Picture (tube, rainbow, N blue to C red):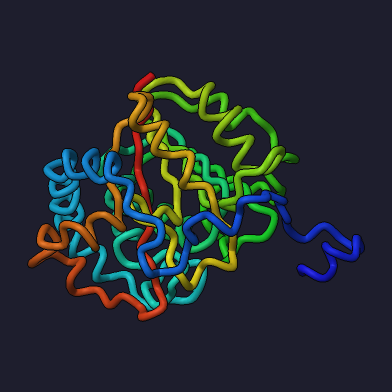
Length: 276
């Protein structure tokens, strides 16, 4: 991909010149060059009681979660590392607890399967719209409205209809560049949402840096999140990474401990609620 971009054959990525780049701490090295974001750590710690309560809500659905196995697609399954244990259990529990009238998902696959299962198990009348040009898992056959398109080519109506208690589920390119889907989501769509909408963003390692094994991806989406939260525009509802790595004791004795996390998996769901 890099060679195609350099030769001008096809734009397959980004190169950003910056004369002082070699003086910066290296993101994704896994050796602590990028220190934890202490203000976000404090904000998440403050919400630990609420996160613990959600874990107990999830545990209340333990029997239904145990029934999820390795059924044929498009049924959800635990044996995958795209949307692993705590991410999937939290999404399932969040949908069953909040019973949203609408879910709009940008970036589909295993998460779509788990939320669709939650809607079925809760028997709630949720209008579920999934937008993705190429989902990472088969979702045909689910009771959803599937728009096979990039965000740029998708209609805006699903976003305009979101109200308090509804869910905007983001798991797209994770690249914040001018004109990218993350640019449109963060700087056009999120500002127009009414207060009370739940916003999920995947692949968020806050309060920590991205892992060393992901350095090649060049993800930068999470860098824009602290200002959203710490300025008071959004409140933290749940963070899979924070729970698993900073307060894992709240998982003790729950269904989450029973479920096997693949060795290659990272749990990275961040749930926010829009305040203003």
